[in-house]
Length: 261
Image 1 (cartoon, rainbow, N blue to C red):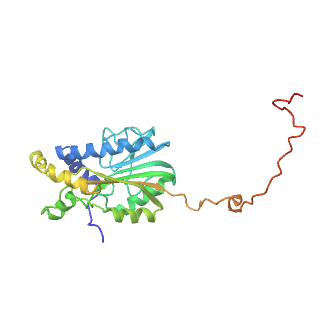
Image 2 (tube, rainbow, N blue to C red; image 1 turned 60 degrees about the horizontal axis):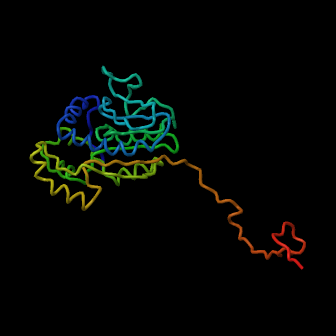
Image 3 (cartoon, rainbow, N blue to C red; image 1 turned 180 degrees about the vertical axis):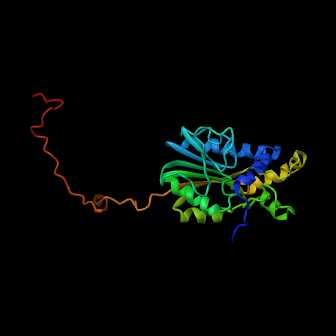
């Protein structure tokens, strides 16, 4: 199944940022931050790459990686000194040069999501981690997107890539999924009063399936090709029990006590 052709990410940025500044967008973002704050402290290295629609967001605030590089598709004021202006489909970094790649809805609004993922895998070093956050089609949000009449607005214009497809793509790029999490089970209504009415449904959804939240977060590790652990030869040999002759105690040195006549 192909993806609907989308405008460039630069054209989507104003509308995306505006939606994430709404109350619903802020709640979703807070839930995403919470998971990232739990996971990133366990991932170490020298370079972290953040690919997002809004690089004003400090998504890697809990990461121990000090050199963090946000990739921005357009030049704008307020970017950090370490920011790089580039298309997500053509990252200007060397192969195997980055320790952690964070894709924050970087595939949902890409013209070529697979190419963005391919570039992310290319620059990731062997043993490094890729974290992908994207909208989950297997959720109330996915159902709402299918039923919504006007799909030409964000976030409903996003690709909503399913977990199984993501697993297949990652496997082709020699990335192994080591953890998959989902969160934010509230209904996608703009009005808070409507979301409050659906709290019972939210709780039931969370209890029935932990992978039906509004977004999915996959943590994948880049496998090192051609390095298969080889069992040492000595471990393969069958050990033989050889009976040992016990030494005679006659004339032994350092006796504890002597018999008196």
